[in-house]
Image 1 (tube, rainbow, N blue to C red):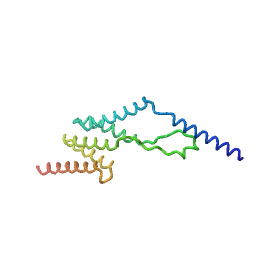
Image 2 (tube, rainbow, N blue to C red; image 1 turned 30 degrees about the vertical axis):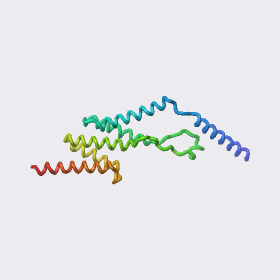
Image 3 (cartoon, helix red, strand yellow; image 1 turned 90 degrees about the vertical axis):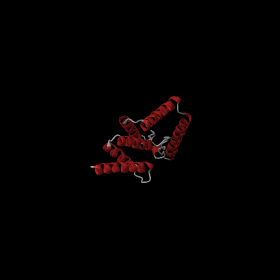
Image 4 (spheres, helix red, strand yellow; image 1 turned 135 degrees about the vertical axis):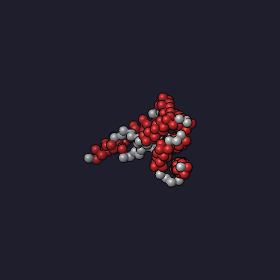
Length: 164
């Protein structure tokens, strides 16, 4: 029985050493790095396009893409390991250089402001309220900016009622 325990320990040790050794010798290939960078640059270009456009339809499409990406970017990393090792390995942290949710919020604010300036008050209100719901922390820049724009929207509605 003691030999079985030693043999199992030896197998586990050798397997662990093999995993560590293969992990140390495999590096990211230039093609993989280019692929990751092109994905990030595409995302960054979408964000930059959203912030610079004055076309409400284009900003809305950019916002949709950013929101979709921000929802899928936080999916966990799964490393295929034998069941014995799974409990010993923690999920790595997400190493995105930017906050995709913040990029989506900034795009939503810009899109809401475009809608407000073009008289699309329902669209503007929906976008601004969505920013508040997604960034519930009261001190958030995005929440404060959305509330400011909503107040501007509300005062515009009051002024139009006073004119009649």
